[in-house]
Amino acid sequence: MAAALNPTRLALLFFLLITTHFALHQGSSFKLSNKSGKIVEASTGHQAKQSMFRQPGCLPSYVPPMASISSLKLLSASISHHYYQIQNPNPRNNFPFHTRCSTKPDIDSDNATDKNSVVENDSNSNTQQQFSTSPLNQTPSSSFSSRGLVFDLGPENSWDSQEIGSPVVKRYLSDEEERWHMWYHGSSNGMTQDSTGLAVSSNGIHWERGSGPVRSSTDVGLVMNCSKDWWAFDTESIRPSEVVIMSSTKVRASSAVYWLYYTGFNSEIIEFSVSPKILVENPDRAEKNGEANRVAINGVFRSLPGLAISQDGRHWARIEGEHHSGALFDFGTGKEWDSLFVAGPKVVFHKSGDLRMYYHSFDAECGKFAVGIARSRDGIKWVKLGKIIGGGTEGSFDEFGVKNANVVRKRNGGYLMAYEGISADGQKSIGLAESSDGLKDWRRCENGAVLKPSVEEDGWDNKEVGYPCLVQMDGDADEWRLYYRGVGKGGRTGIGMAVSQGSVISSFRRWTGFHV
Image (cartoon, rainbow, N blue to C red; front, side, top):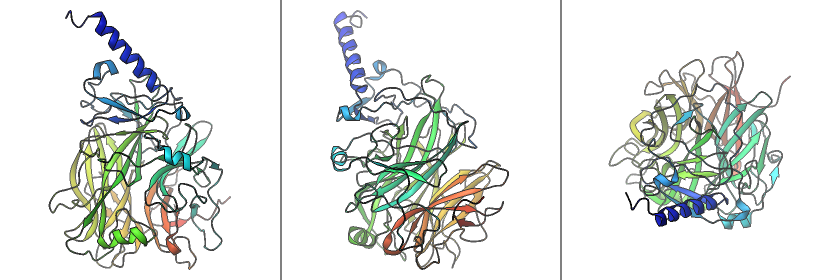
């Protein structure tokens, strides 16, 4: 006891706390490293103003059981259990925000958007790309029909000039205005790595974007790069899958924290013992040439699910899961259906202490894509429950499986899944399935695909459509928007939007403009 009260030791502890506090508030980027998979409270700058926006149709707040993280205290009480890695302190990156995770977050909505952030700043990318903001998405080329297109490739030399996709779209309302956020993946010319960016809109149609990395909590553009740790699971590409908002009653300064679930890819290529009957890629590339073509022939990249947390949706701190690579969990073993990879983790809140993750893989045993489910009490530790939906009937648009499932909880009860279906000839279309409990009781829409590639010869999305993202609108009618990635001639990609027709969600029409 006398040793604990030694003035020298007290002075040393006080010095460590003060210097750590000073370093964090200088805007130093960092990564939360926590081998136990627990949430760690962290800070990288000044407090961000609390968001006053809500997501339409959000569920009541709740406090899930968080026994795995409830013991975390202040930095002085947890120095011996967790470590912080301060990286690249740079006055230019003194962002006016902090990422903070409390011990008992409340979930304010079943699905929420995340604005990505550069937690591990890439000094090379910052010097090579100058930030700029475009008030609208790039004007479509006159060489193709743009019906349904709402977000085109970025301008030349921007971070998203070569390919875009994986739209995660969220709508927020306040008493004064309406805000839309879209996280998506992109790559630049000559690059094979995917990064994650953020675009914003006032109506979900016309989007503001940035050509380089974000530099403040109000900027748009590139928000998250691949990891630079050689042992990490996400060193080659990262693609956003879902954003969930969790708020905490224990943090008086802020009640909203963004949780980004994403797919991380590394350089490991998987070889098939028996060649599949359809083209298998992970990640799938619109351009079938060069390195992408080699991977398509020889195998797929290994991928796993990851998690990052942000105060403002733009600046992110990775949370390391239980897997040695930092991923939330591992792929399956032996002949399990998900033994090749795990991709597209979509997370939905069901009730207190019950979060569901829907993800896909390629089942090598049956030669088809499938979607499975995992459950969690805290959003970090997950238990896989198995496959819930696989290939359709012979001759159907999804005969060879389903992938990139987007699951939402409907306001009137039940769950709706939009998914990418693969036919016997490899064509990709979008289908729907419904479930009363969101578990294994999934029923396909009887009318087949709800959105197919355009039949127009010059259609911007006449090759394939996929990566669906559903947004339920306000009003008495059951109106939905369906955002998706389209691929056209030459592998050119874009993000489109279709709207539901009538009160029964059985078909969608591509957006052609506002009607008054």
